[in-house]
Length: 295
Length: 252
Image (cartoon, rainbow over all chains, first blue to last red; front, side):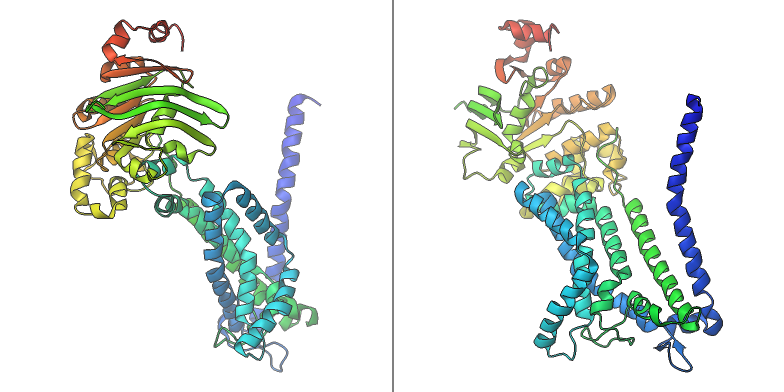
């Protein structure tokens, strides 16, 4: 084989490997739609997404996933509320304040948290968090929004923290020096220079953390309580979309209406995470601040 | 101490870890003069400059010995707050480093940190931009990002930003090394203008620049102060052979 032929051969080999993940994704999306779309012959799109009743096994069944969507959003919202301050502040501490030894320890602990299997976190939520909630607030069950949000937040923190940290590290040293040279304290420099300069990266981190939380299945299956109704308080149980799919898929007859409804739920979930990822991508490009001086 | 001396060093040694970067430096900087620090790369001139406003504090594992006396006090004594020192001793860096904020906010940044100074920021912005001879170029775009300015404009903005703190001393670390000749000329004119009101200490690699703009010149080599005298004297008949060799381009 000539040298050129070899180069071309190698180029295409790599191209094919790169293509594999694209093809796999396309096939998954295709089958998701093939299995999900038939539900709209049984129920209209509007009644599916905004329907208030999810009784897929009744006769006649009700396929309204609005309570599930609300469930997903509620736990994601509260998880974000908890995870963003913790993740971002931890990232600021690690990248700007901590002495080197503490920095290394903290970083590896947070990475370890990312490595915990979700079933372990779910188990923690069931046997530790749930009884505490139940006793403290005198509730019928500790498996509820608060519990799910706390555990989801634990899962989102590593994502938010490590991506924010990268964004903070990327702030040029020159900005910091300029600020210190004007008589700013470390705190003022962090708040007024470093944080704003890293904001686009931090927003990306938050969006990706939310995408992680909304798609997470095992935790919400184990600790959200599983009630398919619009919650009235943060101590109510909910049934987020992934939990519903995971819990019911094994019980549904192949290609029944219920089966199609679950795939359609998966489609909704797919679009939601896609939206989060697109927003994250947009934010990271749109608000990217030009680096230090260009000559 | 001589009333014309604004800051003086007594037997200053400086270490990066185990390495001694400055050896027994004793020198006085005079008020309202431009003092140039020259010498080959790694001779310690930038290190010395950064000692004067305690910027070296930001680098881990460094150590200072000796006294640097400013306003009658050693700025390295434990009861001195480096933040206060930096408010009075401003700095302009080698690479223009405006904040990724608007032109207006770049200038207002420093004064806004000092709560008492929040009086008339608009006027201060105008005044300092005029001082830095940048006002006419930017007066209509004060709310645009400073990143859109050219390199030379950015550097004048950085000078204006430092002036907005009304410092006693302005430290400049090779402020024109990243600029084209025209921008360099503008900055040099500006320095000429500024020395009426400020004491300027400038590190430069450009010998002609030192000769053009400074009143006094200090030549450093390998962390030692070799010769320190009137610029005219240094550039015409230096006392030390090494200085002459460096200035005439025989080494460095």
